[in-house]
Image 1: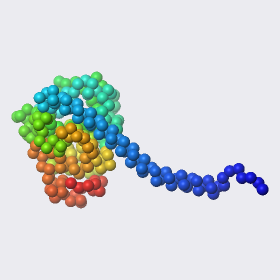
Image 2: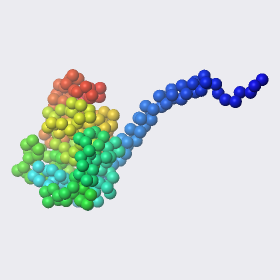
Image 3: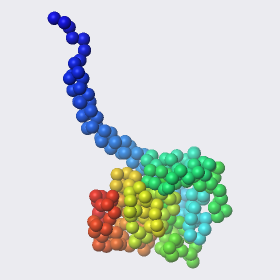
Image 4: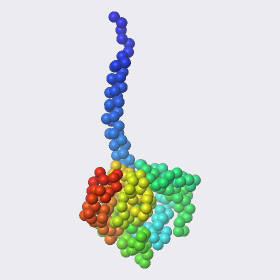
Length: 274
């Protein structure tokens, strides 16, 4: 009897089919594990930022940054050189969005997108330098925390009195977002701001909420809060947070304000309502 030295064609096909089946089962799980790791890394960055910002305010009698003009713009320029430097300070970047849309030579590679960082911005703004390598990152600040003059107003005529004048005495601190995943380093959302019409076209129109309502972590973003906590925030919950003192948490994009499923763009409808 002749001895067999290898597999038959049928046996090889069966083995290949089994491997393909196992890969089909394992790949979604591996993607979820990879995304979970990115979200954990994002939250870790925001915890570091939370400590840094709390320390800054403690050393300044509770006062946050002022921005470089009366509107509270360009606050990153007021950071120390090491903190503003995107090459040295890697906590500027969510692990899901590490590549800036503008390169070191000023070339704009594409429009703002949920998986790209903003920057690199160089030069001087309001008398403040953007630092040795410029500023870049993938997090945005709730800019109603910025202390602007009493007789001034934030973007779209939001009175200065609506802002949080003392960071260490913020009411409902666990509901006040501080730093989070975003397409811009300063954020000024209002109640009537809607979500982006398309999941990957978040920078559009006047809606400032669209610049933070980005599907970076499977229907959520990561955010730090004024009480020092950091957590994942489902996208539709953004409209129920206390962005400024007079922000209506029962506005038109909340269940309490009467929003219905058909009003949401198709891409965001499956996510939980608030």
